[in-house]
Image 1 (cartoon, chains in turn yellow, red):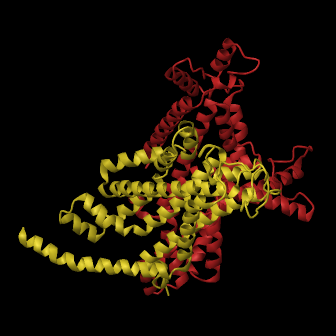
Image 2 (cartoon, helix red, strand yellow):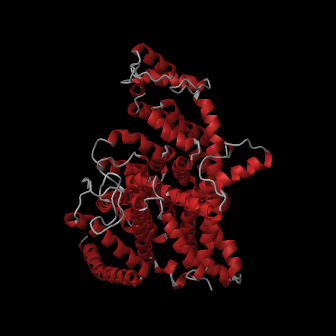
Image 3 (cartoon, chains in turn red, green):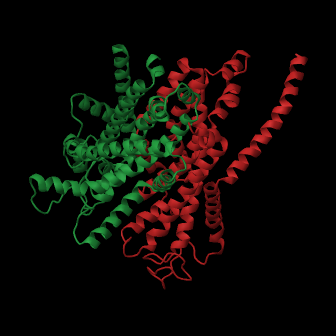
Length: 305
Length: 327
């Protein structure tokens, strides 16, 4: 037993060194990607502006300036004002805060959930797989957007964290199915088979061998999930089933601005533009990370000549 | 094979049954039809309210399990219940379902086929001008929520119509209802009204599929079996079409199956914004009017659609991938 441990420790050291250099390699590849850096810059700016600017901005998102009703952008109201004199900049920043937090929380939770469930089902197979997949099918068959709209009657009066919970629970199944498919094919690969015959426990195989080998898919899924979660939240809010007044989200702002989009564009353009830019930046980051992790499929070596 | 199909069919029935049951209890718990009639001026006597609610099987003084059993018994006899105005839910359904299906089928067919095609071309011509240009276009589309896209298309079309001086692209309704139309002019009018909503649905899913197809195709392009195909003497084009495409397209089948639910949600926005009286608009309106029977029907119908698209996806996958067929 001692010899085995010693051998394990000896082989672990160079492996650790190799992992570090791989991380450095990935970071360098990522930093070389201009679109991804643009995405990082945009998201960093959005976070900074959304959370810091309300501390200094002259107006609050619930204050009315009765001297400036429905005014265009000006020095004191950067994005103009609404029909009842609320500062659109303050509202937009408040909405952006909500959308950013909800989007990222939902993406992290739902991708994590789908990775674990999907990899487990695909790896163990048999009865457990059938049960898990049956539940997944059931949740997929229930139209999640419609269910969220129905559930909104519950969380409308409560904390927005219920909205995060609802979006997470109804948004992990598709990725889980994809992950399961990949796990099923990885399961038969030699390195996984070797680990299994060496007696490595299932949970270790899943975490150490399966998940890293599908990292690119998980990362793409996670970024698209940030985008998807932001889109779902703003969509619910647009119809009036998400974030509730007096609080605002980018969705509610767009809904309110739509009616007068041609005559008073500032009510609508800033919220819409910031929403598109934010989601776009998350997509750029996702693809940058993917290319950094998996250069073989995306760069040079990818071409058949 | 027959046994497999039968088993699958029974499972689908079971899933629909559970989905509609969950939908029924969820809708009964969250919607309160009695609220529609209370606190009105002049007030409605309680007996009248009870009578109205009883016709719709939505009286909250009757236990929800009893109402569920009544509802289920009706469904088994082919009676889907009544709404609070006393109309048959099924007649409203048959009026609306084709409005939505026209939008969904056309939108998803266009979106999927163009998306897959552009994705493949993008991957094969990676980093060439087409790939770069189309990637940016697809990224921006993917980042635009369907309601924002629909609004932008609508206002873009209004500006466009004003510029050319005629109402070429219609932005409201399914056809021109102000004048009596027949024959070709009716078809033309419907087409004019169809373009923008279909685009709103199709553009988003086109962008979605082209991104995934590009990624999946790139993975295949780097694979060993394609190099082997080249090594045994196939041309690049032959290798791509015979060995690359088949492998790269099969993941899309899975995405297709389960993005259909998303499409239905997208239809809710599109129909609301363009004034189409379809299923999605019906759902939003029914929630506002506390129509339990209508909501349950829409939830169940969407479940059926998702199952059908899942079946189509599995058949496609079996055709494309012999390993799946054997399993």
